[in-house]
Image (cartoon, rainbow, N blue to C red; front, side, top):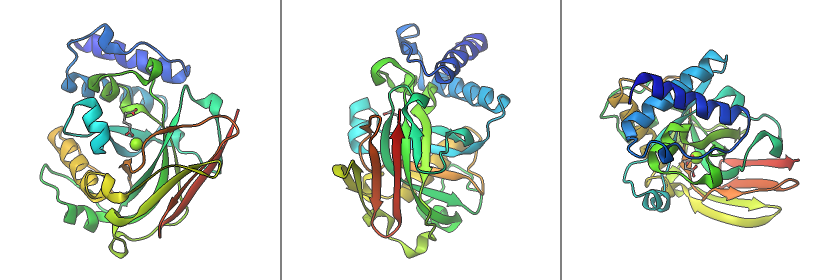
Length: 260
Ligand code: 0L1
Ligand code: MG
C-alpha cells in the first residue's frame, strides 16, 4: 500500500472519530490490508492526533483475553494509544461524546522506567513499574456496528476512546495482580466479573508483550506512561442515565454516571 493511501485511510478514521460517526470498515475497500499496513495507518492516525495538539498518555493492549483472541482468530493481542483528551476526570461522561461506547475493567501500570527491547520479561516490567491503578476503559469502534477484522481494528487505534482511572495508586510488589478479582456493575447489577489472570495469565505479561511488540517496530515504553493492560471483564454497552462501577479487590474502584 502506498503512503498516500495510508494517509488517506488515517484521515478517514480520524474524521470519523472527530465527527463521532460510524463508517464502513476499511477492509471492505481494501480486503488485502495486512496487519503491518494496519499499524502504518495507526501510526499516521497517531501523528494526526499529535499535530492536533493531543498528547500520548501511553500505549494500551487490546484483545488480551482468550475469548476475544479466539473471536478474532489471532494468537497475539494488538495495541493502540490512549491520548490525554480521552482521559475523563470526575465521575460523569456524556453519551454524546461517543458513537456506540462499551466499557471494560482493566488494570493500569504507571511506569517509572523505560522498557525497551524485544525480550522484555515480566520481572523487568514489575521492576520498571512505579504504581498500579484500576481503570475503566471506554472503547468506541469507529466502524458500523463494531464490525471489523483484525487489520481494521488495529488501524482504528484499537477502538481507543476514553478512560477513567481510580484514585488509589499502589506499588506492584505489594499485589498479586493475577489474583485481583474485579466486578463490573451497571446500576448496581453485576454485568461481568473476572480476575487479573484473564489478561494473558498476568497483567504484567501484557506489558512485557507490549514492550516487545513495540521493540520489534523500533519503539519503546517510556517512564511516566500509563499502560492499559487489557479487559479483565468483557466490554459491556451502556446507556444514558446508567451508573457504571468497577470494584477491584484491594486496589479500589472506578465509577461514572452517563449523561445524555
Ligand atoms: O481495548 C480493547 O480490548 C479494544 C480492542 C479492540 C476490539 C474491540 O473494539 O472490541
Ligand atoms: Mg481495553
